[in-house]
Image (cartoon, rainbow, N blue to C red; front, side, top):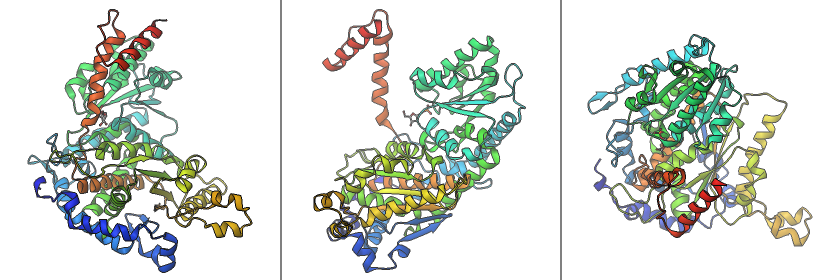
Amino acid sequence: MSTATVVPLTDRPAWKALEKHFRDVAPLHLRQQFADDPQRGKNLCAEACGIYFDYSKNRITAETVSLLIQLAKESGLAERIEAMFTGQKINVTERRAVLHVALRAPKGEKIEVDGQDVVPEVHEVLDKMSKFSDRVRSGDWVGHTGRKIKNVINIGIGGSDLGPEMAYQALRYYSQRDMTFRFVSNVDGTDIAEATRDLDAEETLFIVASKTFTTLETLTNAHSARKWLLDKLGDEKAVAKHFVAVSTNAEEVSKFGIDTENMFGFWDWVGGRYSYDSAIGLSLMIAIGPEQFREMLAGFHEMDVHFRTTPFEKNLPVILGMLGIWYNNFFGAQTVAILPYDQYLNRFSSYLQQLDMESDGKHVDLDGNTVNYQTGPIVWGTPGTNGQHAYYQLIHQGTKLIPCDFIGFCQSLNHVGDHHDLLMANFFAQTEALAFGKTADEVRADGVPDYQIPHRTFTGNHPTNTILLDRLTPAALGKLVALYEHKVFVQGTVWHINSFDQWGVELGKVLAKRIIPELESTSPPELAHDSSTNTLLTRYRDAKEK
Ligand code: F6P
């Protein structure tokens, strides 16, 4: 689809209608809306792929939904979905296809890039990963001294870390418990030092995960890991048994000293933050085994099919994405809180932070024009109920509008007393409290003294989505992640931006490269930065020498 055919966002008829409609809806209170329509909680819901999505506690009417769907249509969403799924080069600034959906396409499906079907290659790599994972798990792949591998350390950063780590934590229940899995990302030496300090090198496997294999943090950590190993084992040959790589860059992998036989490839049409279901998930596959990894892929695929084929009115990623547009662009909300009520999802919000903010944090559109509307939100959150005792105060009674996604499961994986009912009671209570609040009259009726009444009143009318699943399984995780991947895509499409590049991370990297010799050289070059940076660097150098 030519990018030029899309009418500028603020000129689209549905946008204009939504601007007008917003003035009618903004003053409405959820308390009144639920009172007016006793079926609201059943009507404003959608269900697919085992995900029950209740969006009734949003500040919308049925008309809002139809106008938002209209906006999605006017934004060319259907065409963009097809363009993505059929391998068109929609990442225009890097001239690449965007095909994370091919990573979970079943054998036999055909998805072409430049006339070549990529699905067989995907399955070849999956098969190679499966064989390797089985060998490590069973003890058939041994370390240099013949010992079984008991520890796996994934070295990567950004998408090469957040995805595998989030998914490992999420699916830990299903993992091989006699093995230890760690994830090293930060160039701060503390990360690798703490990750290795209590491990036996003879039993440790490092997976160096980097799409480009040029990332400073990852290569620095990989070199330090190599040194740690060689210091302990004293033989260069040990590297072959203790290091494998996941990358698209065979040349750099081999320069590092890893045999490309022990490299698991992927492709430039997989973005880093969309990659943990590729070979980047090797550590996860070793943890949960190939079969459960494939169940997770099947979950992703189910959501892909739903997204591609379901009318927008019932399409989970479309509704979720368009509700986000409603708050971001009409209510002026700056952030979105992701609040999973499941301890296993303790890294989920951090993972979504990169997925969403690196994708849609753009201020120019696909044609290079500066946008005159807000794009990607700030994404944050932590698992419930911890957040309730930290920052929920501001969500309930502060001055900012914070739309929240509550994610929960009906069944617990760990049956400990009545913990799960207590957890879920809080889950349901919070969305109820946020929506309906507590009026001054209700507070007074409780016998609260007058001077406290304003402080103990809850205005309510705070919007939430409730995303409810039966059980956290590998497939459920795949569905959830794909839901958010496609949500980000829906929003990027409406904003007419490229959700698949990340040029914004470059400048800091370039400047850091310039500063490194200024900190490390024994005869440092004269500092030629601004007066603030010069003073800070001088102070650091002086203090470091002391
Ligand atoms: O700097 C940002 C980024 O490019 C992310 O997009 C990516 O996930 C991360 O760095 C790691 O990149 P790589 O896998 O190439 O090491």
